[in-house]
Each structure stands twice: as structure tokens, then as C-alpha cells.
Image 1: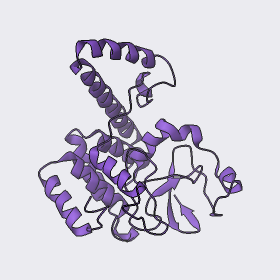
Image 2: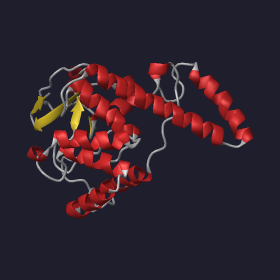
Image 3: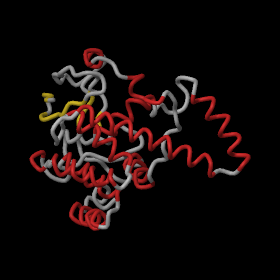
Image 4: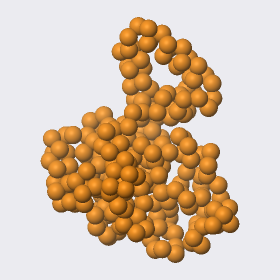
Length: 251
């Protein structure tokens, strides 16, 4: 909140660092995202290797989003030597942890709630398109994870107008994030449609499964429907491109 909402970058980063030193996994992951984007500075302030190291520490402490981010970094060779098989293994591990968390929440409910939830779970476990398809690797779905209160606050703060985004700045398109850009073109945008942008590869992957897969279309269609005329590269589905200037994309 200090870093993004009140724009007290030094104070916010210091608080996150103090929490991270005490092995607070969400703080470690937040610092990782800041390092990946060079948030609060210029694009030259990005430190991909530091972002990977922070995500690795948070993942070791059980942070699922950090584990997913680390998996994508390994798959893409982003800030670390590419290792597709190991990245895939970490992504499956993140999915397994989500499944375990969902099942643990199920057994902790009251008996009558358990019965109802069990019926619902059986319904969307074997029916495509219901629930949140975050666990396609296991052929079943789980409900979307509960959004962290800080992310809820960030999203509501900026969407309500209490916190004004600067000209040309955007929020992460993943509805469960709420992080804003701190400079123009800080976040990377979808390489296929060019209409959404994400603070991290993890947010992009989750939003793809939650909603964007059904909405994404080729960038030519986006331009025909009133895009801003940027030249676009064509990556595979689910890839992202980083905007380095207002008129150009670079993978």
C-alpha cells in the first residue's frame, strides 16, 4: 500500500524488505515482482536474477504464486537458464498445492456444508467449463483462490478513483492482482491481442485460464476495432511481449 497506493516507494520497499528478511513469503514474492519490472524506477532498474532468487525463496516457503512464477521463468528462460522440464514440474507442483489447499478447506467445513460442497465438487470436477480450470493437468477444476486482502485493497483503491493512475499507466489485467504500473509501459502485454497487460508471467497464466482464453484474438482484429496503431509482433498463445517504446513491441 505504501509502495503502490501512497507512492512512498522507499518506505514501502523497506517494509517489504523487513518482512522478507523474516521469511514472509508474500513479501518476498512482491519484491520479486518489483525486481522483474523495475517498479518505481526505469526499465534499466530491472533485476531479473534478483526476481528469480526472491521467487525461489518464497516458493520454498510454500507460496504458490511464487512457485508458479518460478516455473514460468524456467520454462521461458526469463532471468535464469532455460530448463523447460524443470519449469513444467514446478507448474504441476503449484497446481497440486492448489488442489491440496482446496481439499483441506473442504474437510474443515461443517458436516452439512461438507456434504453440499462434496456434491458441488463432484459436479465441477468432471464437467468441463465449470469452476475455475486451474488444475487442467489433473483433469479437474477447483474454485478460484481467495484474493489476498492487500490485492483487494489495491484494486478497489485505484478503481474507485481515490488513487489516480498517471497518464498512460495501467493496472494488471488479472482481476486478482491490483498492481499498477509505476511508469508507462512497465507491464508486458499479451502478444496475440495486445489489449491486456500483466505485472508478471504468473498473473498472465492465471488470467488466461480464468477468462482471457475466451476473449483473446489476433492483434489484426484488435487494430481493426480501434487499436492505437502500434506495430505488433506475433507470439504464441499465452505469451507476453514487453513494450519498450510507445510505438514498438519487443519480445
